[in-house]
Length: 400
Ligand code: HEM
Image 1 (spheres, protein in one colour):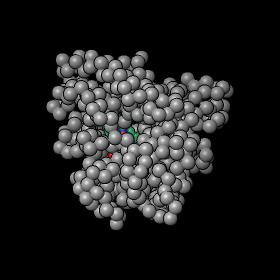
Image 2 (cartoon, rainbow, N blue to C red):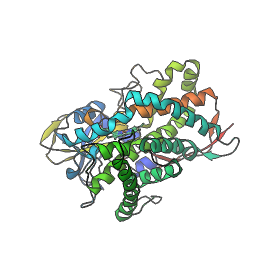
Image 3 (tube, protein in one colour):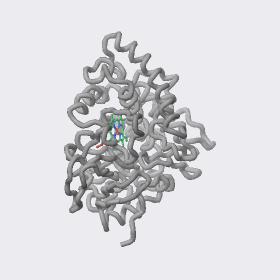
Image 4 (tube, rainbow, N blue to C red):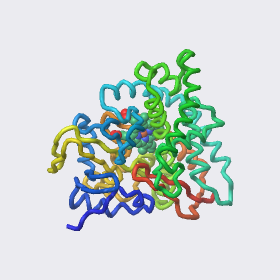
């Protein structure tokens, strides 16, 4: 058996050339040990069912910041930014509970009109007959506006939130990275913390309001966080609400234009919209991987994982596992179990914002179809150099 390449190489995701490597891994060695990589030794978990096993056993597979956190790259020593995605129970449970009301079904219903209004305005403002960047004009604009609403952050400064999200996930080795070193990243995030701290103090002094800053400033589990945890949790909510949805908005357009027959199905039957949205999120898989650390020796699919080993769940691979998803490489609207995918993870850390992201995408597509927008992609997408976020930095398009 030829050696497996290091599937953590960010260049694979920049060039979008990862599919055959995982196809082979799922077939030949689905839980594979890489003794050596840019990030040290690690295990790759490539099949849907094995990823679910790891997700659901948070006792054996920890997310804790102290053990390295949730990305294949360990956090730089002394600069760890704990937050609730990088915690195990009971602290994870308490902090997660503080912010979940913002995405409760009743609040989503309240926000629907606002999201629709803004989406309509963004689409109405698009230029006709000239090349523009879909990422900047639509995906980033809509997600930044939403995020500013969730934080009750000044709308005029909403692109700061996008910038901080880019800073938080940047691979500093990329030639076009927004920050080039860990020190630069920390400096930018400290500035974010300074700006947020002003809003935090104001809201802590006022009666609670329905936004993420006020919720954390008043929440028992979050109101007295140390600075690094404050930065960590803000970063989590900003990246969570921004990068993933934004890339689904762009990836969805690419998928739709490559598969026009699938969009025709939705044009003919709007009840297929939720299925379209789930298929976009599966097909794009905006989060490439999550990492855990084994807290004890444990067996996984016949392999002996050792205490302290890094275990990487490749969602991009699980979402294309033929054993779990029929005709998994195809973009197909109307799958019998459209929400059966791994893009939102599973278990206690399953995405908090899944229903909000689905709502934003549903409204975007409803409004695009209502206007019968005819969009053409006129150049290749520029993809992010990252093994964590499957991002699209720009996509030139025209609108007829
Ligand atoms: C298509 C859009 C989105 C995708 C694909 C996505 C993906 C994910 C994934 C893979 C996880 C980790 C799951 C796990 O470890 O099992 C996660 C967690 C999380 N997401 Fe999302 N997300 C999206 C949208 C959002 C939005 C809109 C928000 C915020 C409003 C958000 C906030 C969070 C938070 C706070 C967590 C941490 C949950 C925890 O640790 O308990 N996400 N997301």
